[in-house]
Length: 474
Image (tube, rainbow, N blue to C red; front, side, top):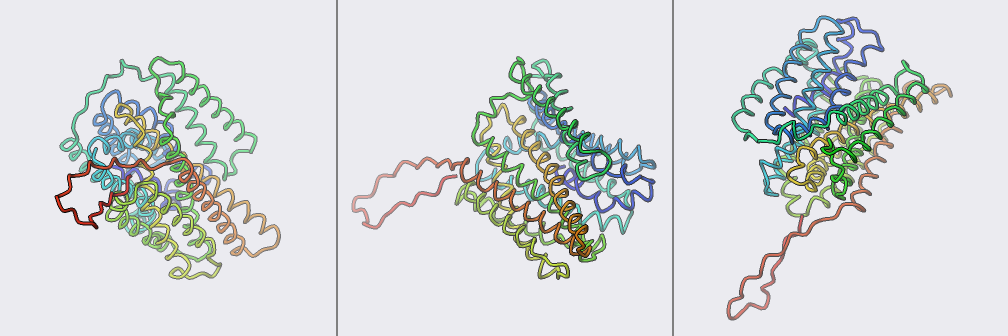
């Protein structure tokens, strides 16, 4: 399920030109194919997490899975622009319901640190590598089968995931909706987040003036402020503010926002660099990303858990963020007439190493500070941080690249040079996000030492060099 959700965030991107021609989208209307999904997804995550706590994670997860799969069918058979946009919005609803409780279920299924680290490695591979795989799959599927199959491919995955969920997941009983779903709070946070994501997504577009977007941003802030007041006074709040007393949760989710801001924005801008500067077509662009998911998969699945057990999540996270930031800086040096195997592929490997270490470690830290009763809430909050970071990162980095390129063009620079320099500056800004996350990790997060086991009685003639080496704590 998580793979479908992540793939749908990027797989559509490569297919957009074909969709525009077939369904006769205007240039402004085309962005709603992406925006409708993102707005529903981000706006409903917290409510979905709360529903998981009240109704049980299994029920909410399976409900989201069915909704997402049905919505994929609607998108796949769409013959009009309006039907496709409605299907994409419904996909966002299903994605929010399912993904908001995924982390809570992982923590419940794998309570032991070692097994949990392995499970988080698989989850992180899907989350971090899925976006790159989406770009690859989007190009291949669109060219080979047509854009409809970008959505229809979800149907067999959804059916298999539903049967597996029914069989493998343990039913959980919650207190029910009578315990308080906080409908007013849900309305405030959903409207505030949706309006905020909408305003952010339109920053690099020309459909709205700066003043109109400022009003949207101010209204979003007012709605979110009202939501905070509501949570502080409601008898059964949607988002219990006590969760923010945890230094771990606050620090880790801040790093999540910064890491996803850099990663999501980088993927789209690197795709543009490959197409507009190096001249790649859609399929070549998708395949060019292959080193990143392969590296992320190898690290997340085979190395991350062992490194976390040996050195602790904080050290692994610091190392991963450092590698990710260095990879972005290396990519910023790619020239106008660059060579893929020299200027791009090595940076993708370095960034893959960084993401493969970063994502499992930071998600474990974000979930470790929550009480079991708040697992769904913490999961929804973490997923909200991911989506908010992705939306902000894409808007900010795209604006930086476009503004700098336009300035250079007005100054007489050649088009390819202006484009390359705009992307380069955006990659440097993305590295800045990552290094800021490194500082937050260094200054805010702390390793929790594992209690040392009681020493066993030594035999009568103890060897003089019998030293006991305690393992490093998590």
